[in-house]
Length: 498
Image 1 (cartoon, rainbow, N blue to C red):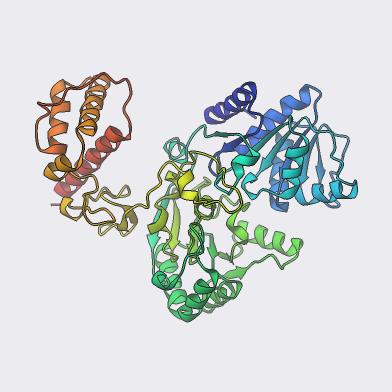
Image 2 (image 1 turned 135 degrees about the horizontal axis):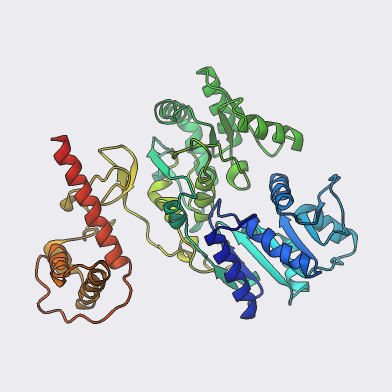
């Protein structure tokens, strides 16, 4: 199986990390990056060298998906999962259910099998058996993989974060499916207390959901009929009871829906997954069960009425619909949990560091991302999709400058004119003009272009600015250029419309 360029880059970064002595890297790649293929490629090399390698999965569904991938790659592997027909402990590579592996180690009084290299899928979960493995095999190469490496203390287990490419970059390459976000009615979040920086009080959510269940379910069904485009859909509810009620409401409207939870046995869950994948019913509803490990490229829509504060939960939920599939031009996220306003597009969230927080330490998942501020969001008045101010990426609508306020209501977002001139320091202005000149050189523009852009931003010419040489532009200029392009497209559309 030929690796794509972004996957080759990931393999290269893994080897580089090992060469530098950092044998416990985390591959922080988004959903549909091809992390299992990357692991298979590296483990195949391990096999060819006569070494023993493990690929750890934490769910039955993930074991099945990994088997399919490894088989295609020609890897000689066995499977460690209860009563699995492919059990073959003598094979050099093992796909292992974490739960089964833990029971085997316990049965052997804590003795671990020989392992030269291991990959741990969904490593943010941090199972005790993996902690034990890392502690006992302190010089063994153990590589974590996660689309959401934000959990507390992950940096105490692993020692290097690798992000070869972001979700936004994969979207540009058409390896991910773009998402349309729509915001619907939700419970009154003013009545919901927080339980730390990453969670709301579940009791408050349950109470308010029960109080507003009729309003919620009515608006959810209306929005799905209007915006869901009759797509294969999964739904998240704060409680099992809410999920079951939602299913009953959909069924009463003649829309096929089923509830799934952890209390169903493995065969029942598998049958529901397969039936939903085949399109035998439209909506598969749960509380949290489908949050991770649910791989269904045909699923195109998410209904989310479960308010969250966790970046991990948000990235994982949106990840359920990012996979591309034939005929799937875009995915749809119906937000009835007010989650988009807290996070913005999940595909623009990028991990920056691993948590070193110990038990009792403050741990805020947002602090581990590159963008640490809560975005300013609204519903686009033109196309009705959720947007981050000041411009809608979907249709190009541009919010009037006077309406572009920050959360504190004092400064302007993407401020221009006198407001920007007053707000920005001389250092920022100098950097901005220097990067404009760099951009002009790369594009073959005249120096006059940079001066005009500076004037558009600050309402004055850069006469007093002494630029310096830069070789690359940062988001300071990249965002400005993108902002101007959106503004121009919007004006062109308005001209055509008139």
